[in-house]
Length: 309
View 1: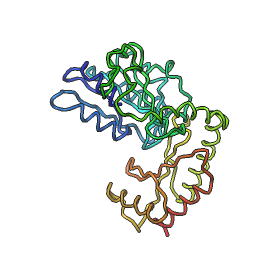
View 2: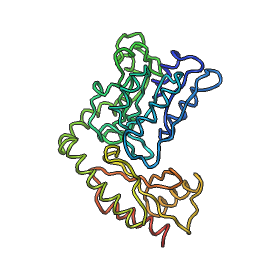
View 3: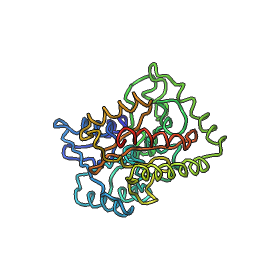
View 4: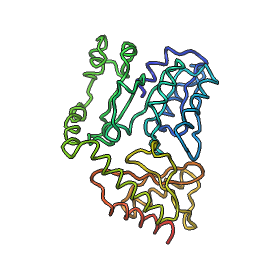
């Protein structure tokens, strides 16, 4: 993402704007804030998706209204699947709307490879970044970068190294100083492993079935609810469940939540991701082929004991 943003920034002028939304990843948000400063004169507009989201049409209208209202927006930066909330944005509809209006669109697809079927050529984004170490079984630090051919000549790596003058995009990202290439070399074996255990369709079916059961079970046990989303906008393997209100702990600030996370890990050797959205605290649960129902029962009991008993 840094590579893409820093490559396109020189083409922008003071007063130009990026468009994103409040569910984007904090590190990407920081990068946009770094780029958009007094010296560059660039700005970022952050949209707030409705709550609850009732249809894909709401999201399409949210973005297209913003684009139509402000011609100075030049670049849209949006997740494929949001990290904090597990929302799957309707990119097949949104990307053409951006291009129809002459805007570039950059997709943060960190959670998509291994969780969604991807055909990046037909999807049509100008730039697409996706991690393989989240859902595709590779070592950490393995990722992909896709860009349309018309943008490849101006896309430059952050680190200048041996093949900087090559006309081929792949070459310019090769032999970059002392980078460890072992994780990248594992990618094809990870894809083979995915196919060996049944293929992506079977993994999605298994994981989403387990996840839906777990989310409903936790919501019922805690007396809360699952984060409301239309079926077409639910990530197959990620879901939010609202935490129960508690008189035992104060969870009003980021520091409160951080200390609560630490307490959970220290006492139960359990790490949970807690998101604060729309005035509520939510636990993000995930499912992978190595998970079982017992894992989610454990989450249920730990949270219930710490907050309710």
